[in-house]
Amino acid sequence: MKILLVYPEMPDSFYAFKHLTSIVGKKAAFPPLGLLTVAAMLPQAWERKLVDLNVKPLTNKDIQWADYVFLSAMNVQEESVRAIIKQCKENNAVIVAGGPLFTHEHDRFEGIDHFILNEAEITLPPFLADLEAGSPKPIYNSQEFSDISKTPLPQLDLIDMSHYLYGIIQYSRGCPYLCDFCDVTALFGRKPRTKSVEHIIAELEAIHQNGKTQMVLFADDNLIGNKKILKSELLPALIEWRKKRKPGFYFATQLTINLADDDELMRLLLEAGFGNVFIGIETPQEDSLKLSHKNQNLKRNLLDTIHKLHNAGFIVAGGFIVGFDTDTDASFDNMISFIQESGIPFPIVNVLKAPPGTELFERMKRENRLSRHFTFSEGETNVVPVMGAEKLTQGFLKVVSNIYPHQHSYERLIAFLKMHEFGKTNIPVPVKYSLSQLYNFAKAILKLAIADKDRKYFWKLILWTYKNKRNHLDLAVLYGLMMYQMRENYTQIVKRLEATQAA
Image 1: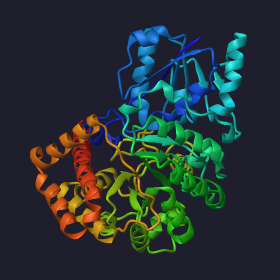
Image 2: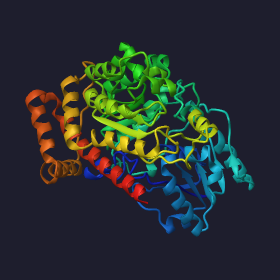
Image 3: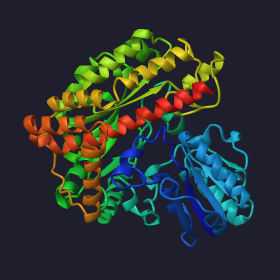
Image 4: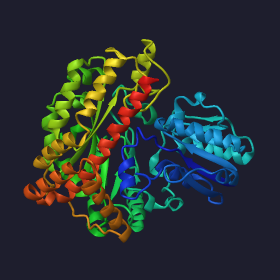
C-alpha cells in the first residue's frame, strides 16, 4: 500500500512566521507533527511519502503514485484544503481526511472518501482494519479521548528538518479552562492527558540527533494544565536531560497567565529551558474577560503580572482579541496602551471568532449572529458584532497600526529590554551554526540594517541594547528581525481588508 500524506499550506494572513522564515533561509516554521504521528501509526509494510505544501508544491505525479491520500488540516487551512481536494479528484485519488477542520463540519467538504474524525489514536485503527477487510466506511468518529501515553513517536525521517525554523513536540492535550471562544475543550477535553517522560525524552533525543534547530515548541493546549504532574515528573526529567545532553536548543510553549502565581513552577520551567511562552491575554477589559469565561485572567493586575514574568526571565508572546460584545470605542485605545506598556515583544491581535464546537458558536447560532462560514483570517470574523462590522474593522486597524510598524515595535521592545532579566536558573544553550545558517543570518542582517526602509529603528534597537544591556544583544538582533515580521504582517492585513471592503 502506498500512502501520500499531505499537509496544506498555511495562509499568509495567519502564518505569523512566514516573512521571518524566508529571510533566514527556511521554508516553514514547524514540521506537521500530526501527520508525522499518523504516519507512524500505519502498518510498517506500507510505503509513505509526505508533502508539506509550505515546503514544496503537490504534484500530479505525487498523487498518482499513491493508493490513498491522507489529508490533515486546521481551520486556517481550508482554502488550501479545497485546492488539494480538487487536484486529487482530477487525478482520481481516494482521500482520507482528519484533523480539527473536519471534526465539527466534515459535511461541508465534498470529494473526501473517508473521514477519520476526533483523535486518530482512536478512530484510525478501525479504519485500517476495515480497509484491510475491504469494507472501509465513510466516517469514523468517537466521543472518547485517547490515552496519548501510547501514541507512537512521530516519523521524522519523512521530512528534511533543515527546511524548518523550529522543531515541535507535544506533551499533553486538553485544558481545564472553559473560555467560550476556544475549541480546545470541545476537541480534546478539560482533563489534560500526558505522554510519559520516557516518550518525551525519546522525541527530544531524535530532534537533538538531527541537530538542525535552535528551538523546540511544546505544542500543548496549556502546558501547565496539570501542574502537579508537570512539576513532579516532566520538568525535573527535562532539567536532568539538559544537563546531561546539553542540546543546542531551548523550548517554547503555550500556557496560562496564572503561571505567575507559582514561583516554584516558574523556576522549574526556566531551568528546564522554557524561556519563551505564549499566553492568551485577550483583553484588559474585565467585563469582556468575564463574558468569555476567561476566569484565570481575572482578579489580577494583568500588566503587573506580565512584568513579573518578564522580570523572572520569561519572554511573553501575547494573544489579544477585539470585538467582544462588551467592547466600546475606548476598548481599542485601551488595548493599544496596554500592549505598548506591557513590553510584550510579539503581540498577536485578532478579531473575535466563533469556532464550530465552542460555546460562543452555539450562542451566536441561537442569537442568529453567525455571519458566514468560519474564517480564521486576521481582521475578519464569523460573528455579527454588537458595535457593527465597520466600526470593529476600523478599531482593529487602529490597534494594529499602533503596535506593528517599526516605530511602535521599537518603543515596546525597549520597554521589554528594560525590564527583562535572564532567569538565574537558565541553563545555557550551546548554539552551533552551520555555514549556511551563518550565511542566511548575515544576509538577513544586511537586509534589515542596510536595505530596509525602516533600518534606522533596527540600528536604534541594537545601539540602545549595546549601550544599556549588552547581555541582551542577541535578543535585540532577534527582535530586530521580528520588527520586520510584524510590519509585514500589518501591511498584508491592511491590504487584504481594504480589498475586502472594496469588493
